[in-house]
Length: 286
Image 1 (tube, one colour):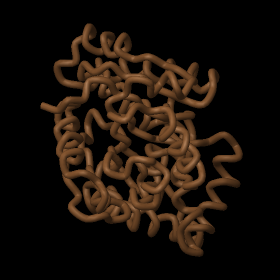
Image 2: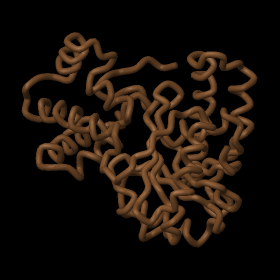
Image 3: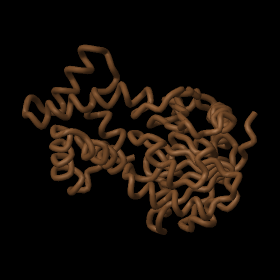
Image 4: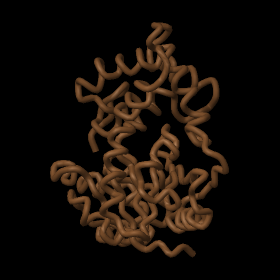
């Protein structure tokens, strides 16, 4: 059993809110932080939606437990309050190195010495950020998949400077919040999941920008031919097109072209994927 009792999640977007709610659902006291009151208001609605989703989709998720998770959550837009007594801070801010650098510089000053820092970055190596943290021995990556109540893998990856005892603590914590923790023994961009997923999604993006086929036909080809439940553009919508843009904008020429396409056709039109009801596909209002 780990010695983690208090959890702070920075960022209440699609995945950040899921991480916070899952930890709260597992009985932890969780503080969810975002940058302003408007983001906090949106997060409160997202958490309420997650409670209803858990009631509908999680086996044995009694209404009482799902509602209790909401009571375990504290929302704030004041960073100092968010991290004042945190045993672990899980960072899920946008996939942008400058934003992460600024976040960790502030965290290093505000968080107590006991706090473990864990980044949920999908594409950046923890070594890219470790120099900003002020505590390299207590910093690592802990990566979650979207819809974590179903896809409950937690990939834990340290840097050469990470204390092995911290890695073990985070692995134990992962199990305590209902994840299947997997230790990544060497730093690898994309961990295991995205090392497999990103090339697949990138190939789909290239097919689109080259005018080979439309998203629905690419998805149907993949799903019908392989029996997979989702095609690549359905996955893009689930992950969120802002994340897709941030990752693709840092890729090669074709990926940057794909990033420009989704920004112009979708993001600039407010079509961010499932979270907004429209992306490559349209989703019914709940």
